[in-house]
Image (cartoon, rainbow, N blue to C red; front, side, top):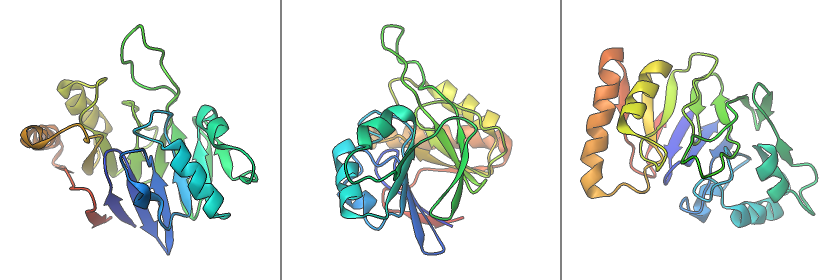
Length: 214
């Protein structure tokens, strides 16, 4: 399986001629959905789903399918989707274009007590990769690869380290990093090294467009 890091929290997974895209938000660019056979969306925030862009992709490609929680599914479903937008919740397992997907988690991390907490589901793909969306969900099963949020209004550095160590993957790749510019990049690299050190793991920040084989 090949993983390609796109902008912010979006990744592409490719295997056996199929492409699965996770969290194509407004910052990911229209090319994020090019050639996608299936899409997973963790939650409703614009940096994780471009609703208009995904609707347009569904209209263009009658084979494209999407899995997400009920709220986003309702926003995407409409004329022409023909049951291709699927609402899923914690504990469900399904096949998405040949990828085995297990749903984990239920809620977005707390931003502030005055801001309502929205639904958020994470996805374990092929028992190998976990994308938590905007939450620090520890998956029910051990995963080798964690897509690790590193910068967000709801996140502290200490939480990044503690979360990564609790999940204890063999490797992690930084996501949720679009708000970090040049001066912050070195700091993120240091945090990743600090998080990985006691695990003997490899935590890496990939530049958008970079691919790795897992």
